[in-house]
Image 1 (cartoon, rainbow, N blue to C red):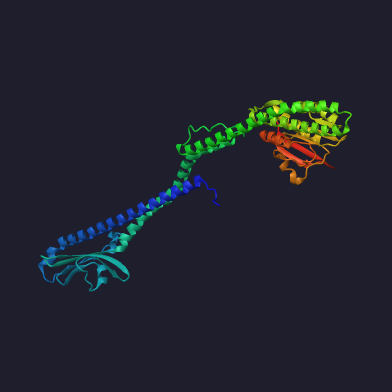
Image 2: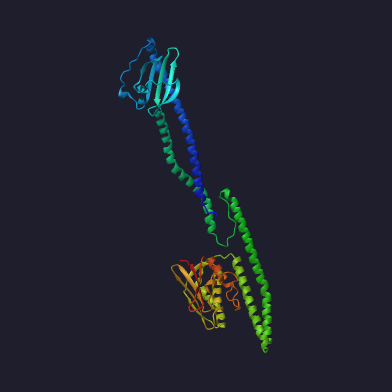
Length: 450
């Protein structure tokens, strides 16, 4: 399985390594070129020094066969720090005419004509020997290669020092440039993350890098397909619900007529009662499907309203159902709680919670609805004393059409699914917990307008 990676870090790594490698290659080539040039310059200086020595001494040396030039004592105050690394010798035929004090260590050694590199006492010397054919004078000049290597080292150091400073500056510049280049993409991701789950409009590709246009187009195509799929699903649900309501209403009317006619026929009345209850359940399912379809297909605009008043209104609307089932409703609603949300969707949520609690409560038991605030959050809690829901079913009952008690004929499997959908729409937290000593407690927690 491939791991996720950071584009910024990869670009920083690849660009920096590429620039550093190229810099090292260019620096290495420049160093090699500089070394060759230094060799040429120093060799040229050796040759020039040999010719100057010949010009200065050829007259004196040429006057006598065995003429020797006496050199004075070298003055220390005139010695350059590189001067002790240079030396020379002069011959007239095979006779040494003059030499510097460093040349004494060469002894009887004689370098070949031209340029050559020799080793004495662990030190390398660069020699240039010039033989004047007319006067038979031989000029030998030499210098330690240490001079050249020291210069090469200084050139390399002068190249390396800026490079060491260049590396952190390079990383900082690349990081800044990459961050600026990725800023539109980060802005796009934040914009998409802030979208509502129902917002399936195409992503605007203006002011974005053309390199990510294919990705934007692909995402827009996916959004369009999802939008079309939702529309087809909602249209099918809406149409199916509308088509089913009419025949169900007719069936319910006919059943009621038959129940009146079969009032004195017990063996028929039981079957008709079951049929009547089945039609009621089917009608309730169709109504919930239609309500769910309308919720999902609407714009669901949010506005500020009094949530306390809504809860009290829904409680009054469901009081007849509670009376019919002989269930006692206990209402504890804190007044004046204002929230920002879709009033219709939240009304459906509260109505489904109370409707479920009443239907699944035994006769003469109490259903409690409470609404309170604390720390900038509201808590809506609906509790009953019915059978409750086992822990292994608490997550699944939030799915569509999932029913825990399929044999009791109650519920459609849509109520809690609708509650969960509305809660998610308002970024609320839905908590299912056991009520003591039995039953279910459903709590909705969400932020309120301060």
